[in-house]
Length: 109
Image (spheres, rainbow, N blue to C red):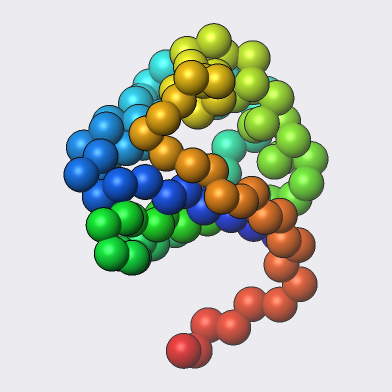
Protein backbone atom coordinates (compact mmCIF):
# COMPACT_ATOMS: atom_id res chain seq x y z
CA UNK A 1 0.00 0.00 0.00
CA UNK A 2 1.15 3.56 -0.68
CA UNK A 3 0.21 6.72 1.23
CA UNK A 4 0.45 10.16 -0.37
CA UNK A 5 0.37 12.82 2.35
CA UNK A 6 -0.39 16.39 1.28
CA UNK A 7 0.11 19.16 3.85
CA UNK A 8 -1.50 22.56 3.26
CA UNK A 9 -1.29 25.76 5.33
CA UNK A 10 -3.65 28.72 4.96
CA UNK A 11 -5.22 31.56 6.90
CA UNK A 12 -8.20 30.24 8.82
CA UNK A 13 -10.30 33.04 7.34
CA UNK A 14 -9.74 31.36 3.93
CA UNK A 15 -11.32 28.07 5.06
CA UNK A 16 -14.37 28.51 2.76
CA UNK A 17 -12.03 28.90 -0.25
CA UNK A 18 -10.11 25.75 0.66
CA UNK A 19 -13.33 23.83 1.32
CA UNK A 20 -14.53 24.82 -2.16
CA UNK A 21 -11.26 23.53 -3.67
CA UNK A 22 -11.63 20.19 -1.90
CA UNK A 23 -15.31 19.94 -2.86
CA UNK A 24 -14.58 20.64 -6.52
CA UNK A 25 -11.75 18.10 -6.45
CA UNK A 26 -14.27 15.48 -5.30
CA UNK A 27 -16.76 16.32 -8.06
CA UNK A 28 -17.80 13.90 -10.81
CA UNK A 29 -15.59 15.61 -13.39
CA UNK A 30 -12.52 14.22 -11.61
CA UNK A 31 -13.75 10.65 -11.15
CA UNK A 32 -11.25 8.16 -12.50
CA UNK A 33 -12.31 6.88 -15.91
CA UNK A 34 -12.10 3.23 -16.93
CA UNK A 35 -8.50 2.08 -16.80
CA UNK A 36 -7.35 4.74 -14.34
CA UNK A 37 -6.78 3.60 -10.78
CA UNK A 38 -8.57 5.29 -7.93
CA UNK A 39 -7.56 5.61 -4.30
CA UNK A 40 -8.59 3.01 -1.74
CA UNK A 41 -9.12 5.47 1.10
CA UNK A 42 -8.53 8.95 2.45
CA UNK A 43 -7.95 10.64 5.80
CA UNK A 44 -8.43 14.35 6.40
CA UNK A 45 -7.03 15.98 9.53
CA UNK A 46 -6.68 19.62 10.48
CA UNK A 47 -5.22 21.67 13.28
CA UNK A 48 -5.19 25.34 14.17
CA UNK A 49 -1.96 27.28 14.70
CA UNK A 50 -2.84 30.81 15.73
CA UNK A 51 -4.62 32.45 12.79
CA UNK A 52 -3.68 29.61 10.43
CA UNK A 53 -5.06 26.17 9.67
CA UNK A 54 -2.91 23.21 8.65
CA UNK A 55 -4.56 20.37 6.76
CA UNK A 56 -3.08 16.92 6.36
CA UNK A 57 -4.74 15.02 3.53
CA UNK A 58 -3.63 11.39 3.30
CA UNK A 59 -4.67 9.43 0.22
CA UNK A 60 -4.06 5.68 0.05
CA UNK A 61 -3.43 3.63 -3.08
CA UNK A 62 -3.00 -0.10 -3.65
CA UNK A 63 0.55 0.50 -4.94
CA UNK A 64 2.86 2.99 -6.66
CA UNK A 65 1.49 2.14 -10.11
CA UNK A 66 -2.04 3.12 -9.01
CA UNK A 67 -0.73 6.36 -7.48
CA UNK A 68 1.14 7.23 -10.68
CA UNK A 69 -1.87 6.36 -12.85
CA UNK A 70 -4.18 8.61 -10.84
CA UNK A 71 -1.60 11.41 -10.68
CA UNK A 72 -1.12 11.33 -14.47
CA UNK A 73 -4.90 11.59 -14.92
CA UNK A 74 -5.13 14.56 -12.54
CA UNK A 75 -2.20 16.41 -14.13
CA UNK A 76 -3.82 16.04 -17.56
CA UNK A 77 -6.91 17.97 -16.37
CA UNK A 78 -6.70 21.71 -17.00
CA UNK A 79 -9.16 22.52 -14.24
CA UNK A 80 -7.27 20.34 -11.75
CA UNK A 81 -4.11 22.30 -12.49
CA UNK A 82 -5.99 25.58 -12.02
CA UNK A 83 -7.26 24.44 -8.62
CA UNK A 84 -4.03 23.00 -7.18
CA UNK A 85 -1.09 24.23 -9.29
CA UNK A 86 -1.93 27.83 -10.15
CA UNK A 87 1.28 29.89 -10.14
CA UNK A 88 -0.71 32.91 -8.93
CA UNK A 89 -2.25 31.07 -5.97
CA UNK A 90 -2.15 33.07 -2.75
CA UNK A 91 -4.76 31.25 -0.66
CA UNK A 92 -2.61 28.35 0.52
CA UNK A 93 0.91 27.00 0.75
CA UNK A 94 1.53 23.35 -0.04
CA UNK A 95 4.07 22.63 2.67
CA UNK A 96 4.81 19.06 1.69
CA UNK A 97 3.98 16.02 -0.35
CA UNK A 98 5.29 12.93 1.41
CA UNK A 99 5.08 9.46 -0.11
CA UNK A 100 5.19 6.42 2.16
CA UNK A 101 5.10 2.72 1.40
CA UNK A 102 2.96 1.10 4.10
CA UNK A 103 4.64 -2.12 5.16
CA UNK A 104 2.58 -2.89 8.29
CA UNK A 105 -0.91 -2.09 9.45
CA UNK A 106 -2.14 -2.22 13.03
CA UNK A 107 -5.88 -2.39 13.59
CA UNK A 108 -6.08 -2.09 17.36
CA UNK A 109 -5.44 1.37 18.60
